[in-house]
Image (cartoon, rainbow over the protein chains, first blue to last red):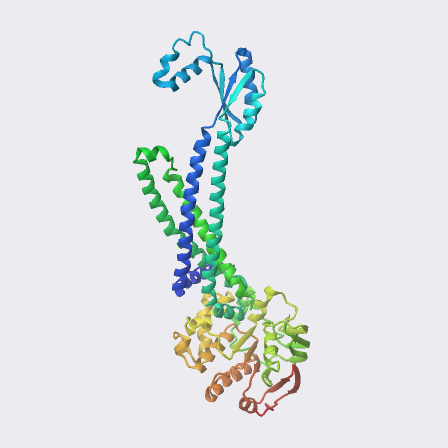
Length: 298
Length: 256
C-alpha cells in the first residue's frame, strides 16, 4: 500500500466518523459504558489482588531446632534450607533474639519472664520465606524432615485457607473481566454492524469499481480504532478521578487506612489507561472488521 | 474499429501500466464457451452460451424478463461465477480467476446500472474521483481526468452538486462518467435507460454511441425496443437461458 493511500484511508475513516454521526455516537457510548464497568472491575480486582499479596507476603515459616543443635548443626540446617529451590530468604534467630522478640510481643507484661535470660528455654530458630507464598506448606514439610529440626510452624490450616480464599477472589475477578470483555466486544460489533448495514451500498459500489477488499476494510479499520480509543478516554478519566478521591478519603481516615491497603495512583493509572485503550482499540477494530466481512462478498 | 480508445491520454495510460493499477489489455475481446449457470435454488439461468464479441463492438442483449440477460451480464464482470464453461475477457479467464483477482478484472470494465448506484453523500466530482482513488491513481492526475470525463458527459458545471440534486438523466451521466474515468476497454450496461424518460434515454444513448465510436466495446442489456430498432447494432437475444438469435444490425424482435 502506498503512503498516500494510507493517508486517504485515515482521512476517510475520520470523515466517516462525522458522516455517520449518530451511529458513531452510539458505538462510542457502547464502548464507553462497557469499558467503564470493565475498568471498575479491573481496579477492584487489582486492589483485591494487591491486598491478598500483602497478606500472603506476611506468611513465613518458623523453624525451631532441638536443644541438641550446636553451631555446626545450625549451619548445616541453614545450608539445607537454603538448598530448597523455592526458598527466598533464611534468617537465623538465636535463643536470645528469640526471647527478646517474645518479650517484645508481650509488651507491658514482659516483666513476667524477666530472668529467663539466665537459662533460656527457647530453642534456636530460623525464619524462612518462600519466593511464592503458595509454596509455604510444601517447603515447611520438607524442612520438618531435616535433622535437628524440632518443629515447624507456619500457621498450618489458616494459611491454606487464606490461599484458597485469595485464589478464589482472583479467579472470580478474572472470570468477570473476561466475561465483560466479551460482552463489550459483541455489543460494539453489533452497533458497528448497524453503521455498516447503512453503508452496504457504498461497499457494493467500491467493489464494482474494482476496489480490493483491503482497500475497503482500511477506512473501517481506522474508524473502529478511533471509536475504540475515543470510547476509552472518558472512562479512563472518570475512573482515575474517582480512584484519586477514593484514595484520598481512605487515607485520611485512620480506620479505613489501616483496613484497606490500596494501590497507589501511580503506576496503577498508567496501567489501567494503557489497558483500557488497548482493549478499546482491539474491540473497535475487531467489531468493525467482523461487521464489514459480511458485505465483502459482493 | 481503429483509432484510440475513448479519451485516450498517453501519459495517463503509461502511468497506469507502470503502477500496475489497471490491467490494460489491447486484446479486449469477450468470449464465452459453453457457459452454464445454475443457481443454488435449481434455476437454470443459462444453458450453454457460446459468444464472441470483438473489440470495439456495440452489442444489445435483449430478451424477456427472467430469460437470463442479467445473469449473462453479471458473468462478465464476475458478479456471478459460471457453473460450467469458460469466459475470457480482456485476457483474463474470468471463470477461473481467484477471489482476490476480481478487482483487477473489474478495473478494465466500466459498469453502468439502471439505478445509477451513485453515493448520495458524495458530490458529482467525488463520485467520479472515487473510482480513481480506488485503483490508487496518482492524486495529481485525478482532478484533470475527472473534469475531462465530466466534460464529455456535459456535467462539468454541476461537479459540486450532490446526486440528489440532479435529474435521472444527469445521474446516469455521472454514473457513465464514473464507468469511463479509468479508461476501461469495455463498458457493460444493465438497462441504463430503464429508469429514464424517452428523451433523456436518447441523450444517454448518444453518449454510449460516442464512447463506442472512440473504440470502447459496449455490451448493453435493454428492454427499449425503439432504441434498438433506431440505433442499429448487433443484437443478441436470450430466451430460456439460450441465445436464440444473434444478428449484426438486428432489430428488437419483441412486441412488448
